[in-house]
Image (cartoon, rainbow, N blue to C red; front, top):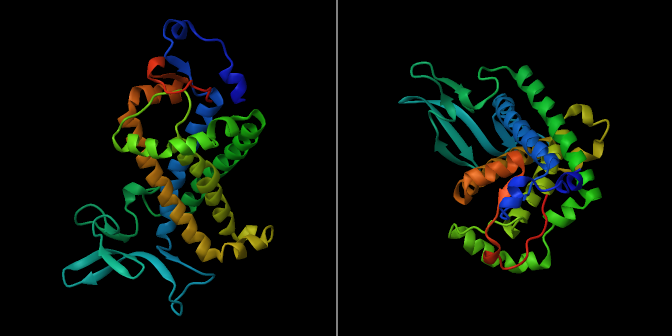
Length: 290
């Protein structure tokens, strides 16, 4: 899929400008946007599902007789009226107006995540589950197809797997990014390979696996999966933690796009064409990237 797309003849515009290269194939761009849309709806519907039980635990069970809560978002009555709170590992923080207690002035209600951060905005667990699972299957299917295609056409080994030379460049890449000094080349730099690899080969598969482990219907199909992860409650906590890491990745990803040149970066993931630095600025010849 990727190799067929990247092999297309250069356009007239590319012939006139040697720095304009075809960096992202149609398949890469399609999966990128499918994953972005799927994760958006999964996040907001997932927060709605979380609101039904706004606590996270470690272990196989939860309840009043267990002291295994690692996160709780809720509301409590105080001398100053209802207040929202978030408790992490026994440390409580006042989060009124955002987490635990939120809503328009005079119409606040107790809910873990506010209405603007959930799908649907009103409490509807059934609809949230339908939306969540629909986009979860889209994400899972496209990721599986992408992995198979990437292994067959060499995209993963060629463009995403860090080589020894990449690891040698890691200190310099870290310093350059800290200084907001970016090198626009056809290939991904070391930090990009590590970040994209972490998301595609660790976080997304872990999100899917923990999601399956939380499903009662999967217990009969994969009874060992729940045990492997330490129980359904632990799987739910891992699932939530992966979601937080994906949100942090998205924030950093957007910041890097803005810092590196949003027009060039967006053109690359929308049309496939990417403007590189003049050849004289390259330390090494650029390699083809999907």
